[in-house]
Image (cartoon, rainbow, N blue to C red; front, top):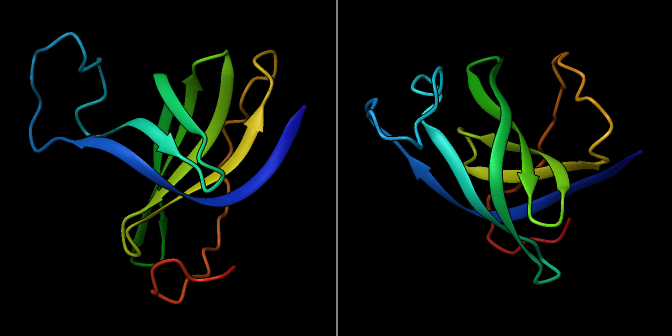
Length: 120
């Protein structure tokens, strides 16, 4: 089952400038450079990311969005998107662990007026 969220969230993430050889930098990860660690929802729930299961970049015109499938504590799985142009994070979906994430590109249209704490 898949639950649509489309929720703006705060994310604690590591941004890397170069490839390092530590165990936390997985093969193929160096070109993606972003690793989400915690997702903070408006309802005050904090999701601790245990593993980034998949990530890919998607161009929307000149904008770059980076999509993540994350595995969080409690065996919860989410689709998370970082919009590099608008510098915001969106929690798109929560889905069951049995469900394989469809690798097709997901089109995300982010409507944001640039004001912190703006109403949706």
